[in-house]
Amino acid sequence: MVTDGVLECGERRYETPVNLYSDMNRNNIKLEESVHHVLEHVHHQFGRDSATIVSWDIDNKGKATYPSDQPEKIKVRK
Image (tube, rainbow, N blue to C red; front, side, top):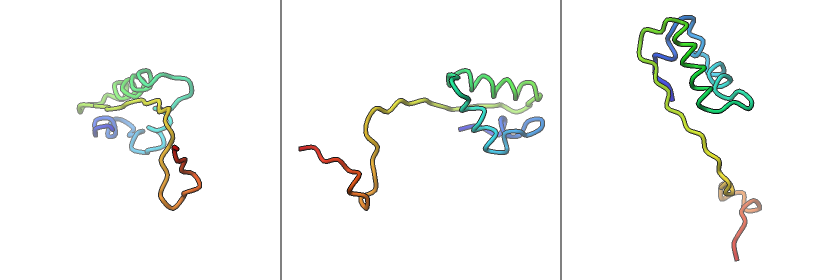
């Protein structure tokens, strides 16, 4: 989640969602480094408004849930 300070600075690179997505999901880069990269870009583009990024990373080891119309994917514990 980002504020308009990230979206509306300089060349407005991050107004295009795919640009923000690709910069936040670079291969083998920690989330903290990706956030730093985006905020550094805002700084170099002379962003004048507050730029805020709220992000989180989760490693879910549990099974995914599926809609009830896909019973073949639901595993029942006995």
